[in-house]
Length: 336
Figure 1 (tube, one colour):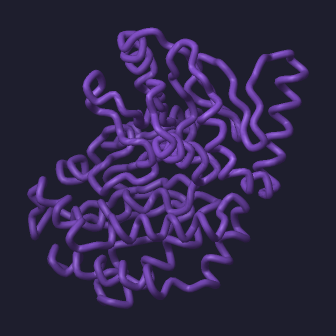
Figure 2 (cartoon, helix red, strand yellow):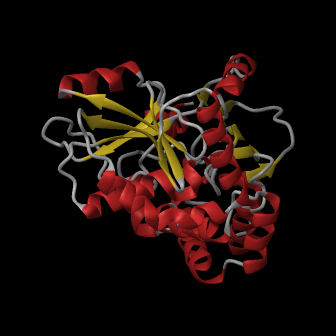
């Protein structure tokens, strides 16, 4: 297949995702993984259709690379994560467009949705199927892209050390608040915190707030997400963490759908949100540098002082050229 043919296949698949993705498959995915609600699955489908299955978006993304028509085809092992629906599909599409075949090991709790998309792509062109091989264990590969927890990342680094690799571990987003945000900003920040139950590596798990910050307006925006407590797994985590804080006599701010605790760490437990006070921009930059290996992205509105911040509400809307951990997956695939 030529690159143009691949882009056309992805674009046509995007139209199908938007208008014809089977409802029974969505239901099946919710049964496999209780964290995958129908609302979140549809949100994820819309997101991937707009970024990875749209010809205009793909061409704009690929314009930064030189992709040879007759590349030296390699076999890429992909170990996908399963924390939010279809989170690993970006690696699959990158491998496809770079001209390689992929051996895909799905996460146990997210093995329903992506195969259906790949099958639809295969129905559009007879050569597509040979680009993807779904496996239970990776064998005979030229390079690997693997995503997992901090613990599995250590194992992956050793196990795949003999081939070129990208190994990803746990990361989270943080938000920088300056105290001048309007209600629209705060509502958008609430999206960054609560979407996908906060399970994504781009969900905000830590707030940096100015000394003396009034949490009242922010907590008011959280009221829009009180229905999240109807989800039994989320509410169980909320109750457990509240009991733990009380038992340990740890101070915290309580909202009906999330618990806020002053803490240094970037990562917070499900239904919890860490915060930390700052007194200057210098303290913010120091924190970010100190925890750079734990931070996926930073949201906020301090562009004069911190130009790389993502606007509130966009943490879970990465474009095709936004790479996990800041490692350019496409460049990696084109150079092996």
